[in-house]
Length: 127
Length: 111
Image (cartoon, rainbow over all chains, first blue to last red; front, side, top):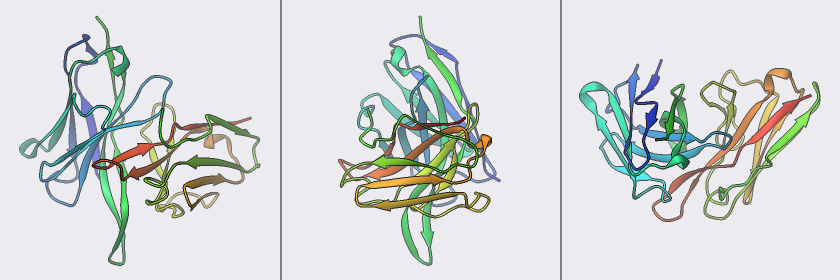
């Protein structure tokens, strides 16, 4: 059973960099056709995809956050990380990490979906 | 504001049926399958419907999905109090280098 757990500071000052780590258990993050993603939910708002990283290390970020986001893998620790630079109060949110699986059947693939999620980490941006 | 829109809220009484719509465009719903998630307070979102109309094992058949053109919908029949949650559609958008887009979410209240 795949489990994900977010960790990191719960409070970050404006203009600083928010850093979170997702520790994965039950599967090797570099061991399959997986993407690993970060999604956030600001208070009172909906879910927003932040970005994804493939097991090869290639990344894809939300265009609205692209200039501030960096994601990385640490295969040795079975973790992946998120850095969000120059944060403001608008970045206050619950951050989720998730595994993305291909949706394939009978040799045909139809898309991908967020299959396993962490319980979320609340991060507040405030001085 | 998301490029994929959902009604902010819907409500129903136990036993009733409701539908949640998800409207997008040619670069997302018009070209890719929609996935639905149920998000209970304090919990991780849970996959409810995949590939527009498929249910993962363990999801009751009271939940069903459909997709046509640039729209999709989630239907829940025989409403139960435990269905009260936020529901999100999610879809890949082909614009630029591609990105996942979530609908704005719909809060279901069971009266």
